[in-house]
Image 1 (cartoon, helix red, strand yellow):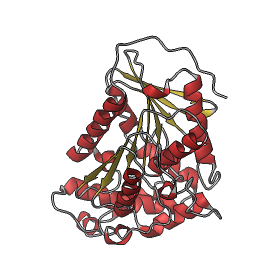
Image 2 (cartoon, rainbow, N blue to C red):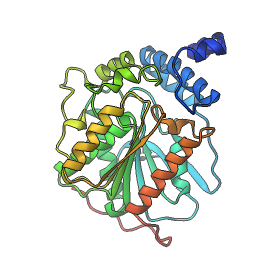
Image 3 (cartoon, rainbow, N blue to C red):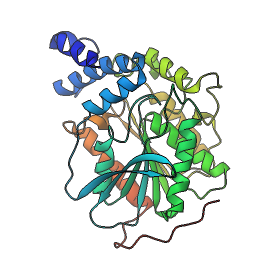
Amino acid sequence: MLAPIARTCAVPLTALLESGRARPGWSLRYRYAIATMRIWFDWAAHAPPLHGRALMDSLSPTPRVEGVSVRCDQVAGVPGRWAEPATPVSRSVLYLHGGGYRVGSSRSHLGVTLSIARAGWRVFSADYRMAPEHPFPAALDDAVAAYRGLLALGHAPQRLVVGGDSAGGGLAAALLISLRDQGLPLPAGAFLISPWVDLTHPGASITTNAPYDYLQPDLLEVVASSYAGSMDRRDPRISPAYGELRGLPPLLIQVGGAELFRDDVVRFHGRAVAAGVAARLALWDDQVHVWHAFAVFHEPGRAALAQINEFSATCVPAAAPCVSPAPLSVS
C-alpha cells in the first residue's frame, strides 16, 4: 500500500518536477503536488481497489474546523458522514465525492465538506458503492436513495443543495436528471467541481492538457471501463453530457483551464444554457483537476471553495436557526 509514497520519495525533486510541464503562476509546491498526484493516481487506478481506497483515506489530512463536528451515519441505508456546525441550521448539502467511481470517500473529502459546513450548512457526504465491485448503476441508485432519504428526514428541497467533484460531480448531474425524470422535487441548486460528465472524452483538452494535469488519458480509460462495464457510455445516466438538461436547477460549474476535462465541461455548460438552465461556468485559468484539494497551501483552491459557498448562499439564503422540520413522506 505504500508503493506510491515510496516511488515518489525515491525520485529526485528535479526529476519529479520535470515529469510534467508547468503553467504560469504555479508555485514550486503546487508543481510538486501535481507531480506526486500523477504518480499516486496511476498507482491507485491499477492497484486492488481496497488498497487504493485505504491509502487515499490515510493520505488525506484530517482538518479540524472550530465549531464544526463530524459524525458517521447513514441515510436511507447509504453510509456517509455529516459535517455540521454547532449552531443548528435549516439548510443542507448532499455531497458526492470524486475518485473515478473507484476510490475516495466521505473521509478523504472532509477538507471540502468541512469548508461548506463552516459557512452554515449541514453536509451529508455519501459513501456510495463503487466499481469494480459495484459498477453502474450502483452509485446512481445510492445517490437517489440518499437524496430521497434526506427528504424523508425533513430536509426541504428548497433548502437543499447538491454538489460533487470529479466523478462525484458527474454523478451529481446524473442525479439531477434522474430526480427530474422521476418527478421528485429538485434541490435549490447544484455545484459541480471539475465534473466528469462525458466518459467518452471527445474534448481536445483530454490530450492537450495531459502534460499539465495529474489525471492522464490512459487512467481515465481504466476507471471508465471499470464503472460503465458493457453499458453504452453515452447513456445520460453515465455521461450526463448526453442527457436532456431542461428543467434542472441553477448550476455552478467549476473547471480548471489546465485540466483534461476542460473542453467536455465547457460543452456541457453550453448545452445546459441552451436548455434554459441558469448555469454559471467558472473557468479557472491554469488550474488542474479539482485544485480545491490543495487549498491548504494554494490560494486559488481556497478562493474556489469560497465561490461555492457564495453560490450556494444565493440558492438558499441563510435563515435564523430553527428546529428540525417535520419529516416528509417520500413514495
